[in-house]
Image: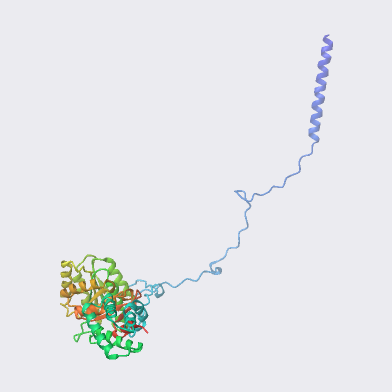
Length: 402
């Protein structure tokens, strides 16, 4: 039994040794793997280093051209080239005033058909009975001609129609033109005193009126009228209660090369007006235009202040013109304003604005009768050159039409 166990152990040992020998021999016979060619990484610390380009000297480089440094003045400060300075804004060239009303005639005619053409239609009736004459009166009154001027015109027309006898359209047109021209008035001096006095002092014009009549805009447009006629102008922004008014006036002045004198908002209007005339004298200009604050004609204190502005300006010399700006669309209410202003300052002329937007062209006649002063300028639109010197004959032509 022991012998059998020993044989088994020896067999196991022999088999194990043989197996180890076979495995070892197999390991020794396996060929080694072929060598692998290393691949250089393209990024990272192990990246292949590119060959350095040949170095170039400064003499081989193409340097950009540089502008010469700005020249220095005598004090050593660099001067700015002219190309960097802002060019001044181009000045506008206003339309010439000669014949301006003729060019604006169509606008006036469109708004005044009721007056001119209405009268022609009534006078052309075969029988001019009392009812027709009453319609003629109503037409004139509706156009704000006023009661007294209306009665005068109707009486003259009655007389002349009887004398005329046969009434052809051409005869009636000529008759009506003549009578309306007489009613508007041809004897007034409608020129503006805008030139220097004998002592070299500029002509001084004050522009007055209530709020909403277009007073500041009219002052700016008037500056264009004067520049178009060859005058030099200084503007005085004496409406210190509205900052927008001074800004607006300055803009108007810059367009035509007129300087604007202004003061602090809420400052003394009389002081600004005084300084404007002072500057006008110093600069030797032809005309000083002073835009005053819009005054409510019912406020006694404000009206007194307007009188103060005029008195302070007169310390430099006389005020040549005081122009009252009236809105033609207000009709008879404008006459109430005119009366009050005439009591405070000596009105020398009327500016009727918005005459193209109303059929009440008869206000020209009424306001002249009320104040005894002429209409010198009329506004016929929103454009910068839509302010025209008033020409009675052209005005009546526009009323009657072709």
